[in-house]
Amino acid sequence: MTATATGTPTPVSEPTTHQKSARPRRRNRWIGLGFAALPLAVYALVVLVPLAQSVQFSFYQWDGVSASTWAGLDNYKTFLTDPVLRSTFGHVLVLIGFFALLPIALGLLSAALLTRAKQPGMAVYRWIFFLPQVMTTVVIALVFKRIYAPDGPLNTALEAVGLGSFAKTWLGDFTWALPALGMIGTWVTFGFCMVLFISGTSAIAPELYEAARIDGAGPVKEFFAVTLPGLRGQMAVALTLTITAALRTFDLVWVTTHGGPGTSTLTPAVALYKAAFQNPQVGLAAAIGVVMAILCLIIAIVITRVSERD
Image (cartoon, rainbow, N blue to C red; front, side, top):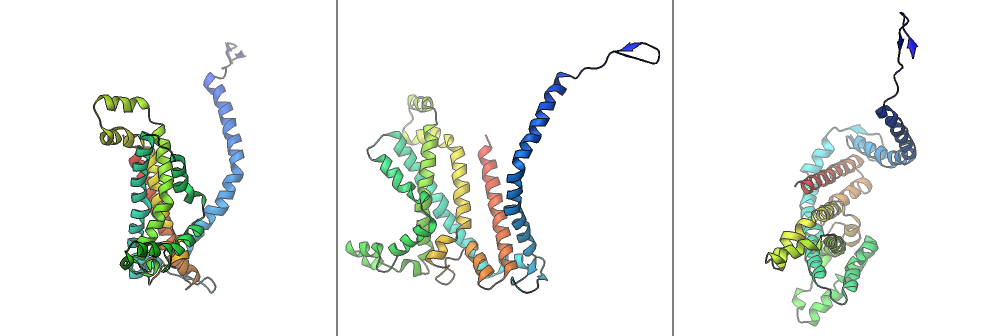
């Protein structure tokens, strides 16, 4: 109690329950920020600062040694209008079909078959196709480079079954080099999609399958009515990771073809490397990197928004 000028006592307001609960929350927030400060500082130093420098370099003509000159949007215009660099987008679209669409379709089919009936040897089957996820891409590229060689196992097998006319120098053929690379990508990402979908299918309530069977649904209708809707989140993850993998693919192409023959397997990542270290045109390389980063971000946002719709 306190007294006013007239001598009338007035009560002192006590802190409300909301104010009392807000104080610990505020303190915990600052403690959390304190723990996150160092990781955030490292992330800013390793990711955000180089990203900002790349954006800055993309507006200059620079060979990495001599003085740079202002170029404005010229590097971006070159990337989008140069016939060779523009063709990399078409190559990426082809690779998306092999890296994303085909593995996801095969992964869904495998998940539906493997979870519907238990068969002996299924663990080995999963292990074989998941193996690329624990191998480096360089090792995989070297293995397939040997498989696709003129005297490699693929051509030898074709000749052994009387299909020698189909034998080719797969990675040296202007028509078949890109699909041959795409098949490597299919093998690499298929196992990941399959295991992801199997784990998602196991989380679907069995009651939904029982209800579908009571309604007379067969295996196909059951898949489209129960399994596919239940895998919406897993499909969003698979699409995001596989599409961005196709956009960013570098080591697989570099080890096998270097973007050749000619420019038939040139991808934006390989074009970026050549612009940065072979020509060199650091500004153009930075512009390619910025465009690809924006594309990956847009793809991730669009897939996430679509998958969250009811």
